[in-house]
Image 1: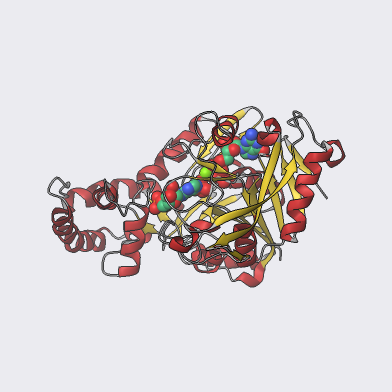
Image 2 (image 1 turned 180 degrees about the vertical axis):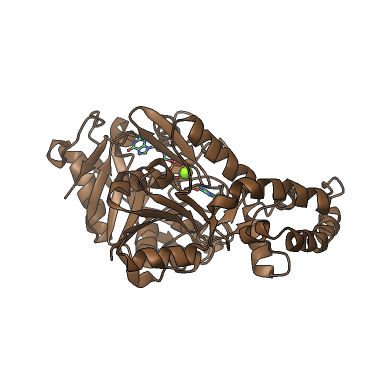
Length: 429
Ligand code: GDP
Ligand code: IMO
Ligand code: MG
């Protein structure tokens, strides 16, 4: 039994979607185990572009079963919208798409709670505004959580909403006078409407996955967000509300880690971050600076919110930390082509904090704020590499950059990506 995980080792948007798509041929099932529609995965195949937020990227390959695991938070409106968009684009989506009965449901009051807490607050995280944090809060609170399976029990759902919604209204009013008010029965009727369309997809995903394991099927776990956004191990509090690393797979899908035989860490050839929080290697160097050059060439604007992504040099201190945490076996280096315009490249190999050298990643955002990167400089290659398909055809300096990353991480690089399309891929081994 061989299962694979694909996780981002930075702050998200490492092009995990492209790697999942590339690996789909070799697996039977693809599973999302964390996050929700805060993710934005763009896949380009045969000149067509697909964007997925909540559904696993693997749903683009109809031979796969695509599972939304229990660790995901599900907004039914987004779910149905994405299914419709795929069908409109000619992708068949049927009972191969499964959503766990134990995944939690996002309600409109979650988005409202997030809005009133985030808006204008000094403590704002810079979230995607998709209700992710408040929904996970309700899951952990137990008294406020509602799960996908509850949609199939109308009386129970109504009972729960009649208790929870008045409580939500009280909290919302206390937080902001202009907060929206919600009616439990109206919400219940709305969600029971979604339930009818979702019904064929709702299943006990844990039983399904273990059955598949017994049959020797190969599972591909598709991480959302990046490991530095992990609620336990990331740059807290500037993180998302789930375990984004491989650490989330066991709890978010019910599949024990012992079945994972290949853990792939996806990294960009540089670093990007959307939202607030420390970013030691950020290139905040103005409209004519390198940061803006990378943003323009890499089209670094958020898929979900359209916000410009903050860009900076590759950070090996952070990568060593997230690779260790995720038990990573190999890395894939994405968007290498974006760096082709630069004269030279920097890699952060250590931090300096209060004149002391730090080789390990500080566990707290306020400590990371005080870290200055220590750089090593490498020459650029100044050649278009987007048509390269074999390792031997990469310019010497591009190869040197890739090899240096492997050396510093002490991990093999299995894939180098030189463009968004599926075919713009170099298999290194
Ligand atoms: P994910 O959230 O990790 O799946 O990544 P996103 O889809 O949010 O962001 C990656 C972006 O880079 C997408 O727009 C991809 O189409 C694009 N992309 C993927 N690989 C490459 C590459 O090698 N070069 C370039 N230029 N773009 C890429
Ligand atoms: P993919 O899967 C990049 C960031 C948000 C914000 C923080 C918390 O495409 O890599 P949230 O809405 O989750 O409560 O926001 O996390 N964030 C992402 N950044 N890529 C993502 O997903 C992200 N999902 C959340 O910008 O800083
Ligand atoms: Mg993304």
